[in-house]
Image (cartoon, rainbow, N blue to C red):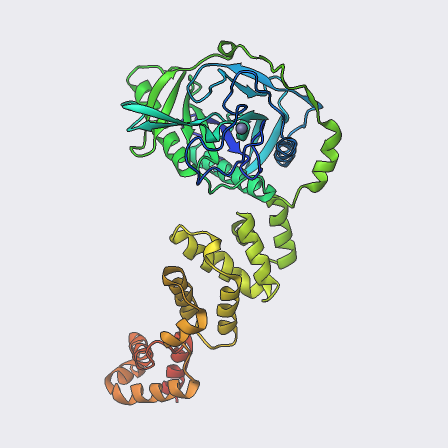
Amino acid sequence: MVYDNPDGVMIGLEIHVQLNKLNTKIFCGCSTKYHEAGPNTHVCPVCLGLPGALPVINEKAVESAMKIGLALNCEIVHQTQFHRKNYYYPDLPKGFQTTQYDYPIAGEGRVVIEGEDGEHVVRITRAHMEEDPGRLVHIGTIEKSRGTLIDYNRSGMALIEVVTEPDMRSPKEARRFLDKLRNILEYLDVFDSSLEGAMRVDANISIGGGSRAEVKNISSHKGAERALLFEIIRQKNLLRRGGTVVLETRHFDEARGVTISLRTKEEEHDYRYFPEPDLVPMRVADRTARILGTLPELPDAKRERFIAEYGMIDMHAKALTSGIRIADFYEDVASRIDAKTCTPWVADVLKGELNYRDLTIESFTVDDIVGIIEMVVSDKITEKSAVEVIRTILDSGGHPLDIVKEKGLLKVEDDVVSRAVLKVINENEVAVADYLGGKEQSLNFLVGQVMKKTRGRADAREAREMVLESLNQ
Ligand SMILES: [Zn+2]
């Protein structure tokens, strides 16, 4: 199947990733652990941009940026340099942002996603380093705010901005790209996606070869998909009424699910970029080989290994490598229980129940799932009961064995079931006669009665076989 992109949708993304696993900010020694702290408590003359304060580059930030570049299959430049991007905004007290311009640390690369019609390549234009500005907190909504507060704790956090070509053809593909990028970054252990502001997305979108609009500062992957869906409809309606889409910057109002025009977009020359005189150019080429050697196994490679090593199908391998924590969780389980047995329990059952509740794998322990699978394998509980135990743990906690005992889920012995079968057959002469006379549905009724007598603890398939056996004697 080939996806023919009926509306001619072209989406490009610019993603700001905060390197929030570093201990200090990009150009000063301020701690990055400000998320629980009061406003303006993690600041110094450098990140407040006070006159005369000089930046010192964080070496680990450079190495993290190189890791990201390599993981996105980018060319790492020989030498990189910082520039000043000049503009005034209250979150940027220096009057310029220190960023990279014509020598970004990472050049062209590529990421393969699950596209509308199978594997789809999204080209990476570049990935560069820059500092995060402070955070503006608008009182009320952005268009009708009564006032704005500024917190400089975020100012000077190391950012990587990943820029893609407009290669995504639908909001769904954009979301898949974001998921894949987050996954790669978590494998690299360079950022924690659960922290506020860890990943912020600007999306540009055009339809039918027209002008593009840019939607700024979307904070979630779901939000990105919704903002893009809204933009497609807005642009289509505009064109249908004879209007034209103008090059502009729009804001996505997450609560209302709409985009609002903020300003016409600046051109690059408006920023008067010039080389940052306080930071020397950095020659990074001689580190590339060493850093390449430190890269962990990345999602695509892990997926292939799972298929080869554990003999699982591609769908399971995708589910189990969709995050580094679920991948590690699975390998722990597979070291204790045969892979063929445990794979569907983790990939289908547990992951399905987690997704349904919007939970992550941290909500479950390896010991618990191993215990549950072992009870099924040793025939102590039915598969249906095992699912019930998993659900109970997720909804209200507890230990598998306690839950099994409390809920009376231990499978009843065969003789209890056979006694129930005999009783049911004796008590239901009409249904038995009906079945023997050719009425197939009566069998279901009889099996149902057996399940009722054993209070659902019999295995339905076994009960059915035992009823059939008795009837055919
Ligand atoms: Zn500082």
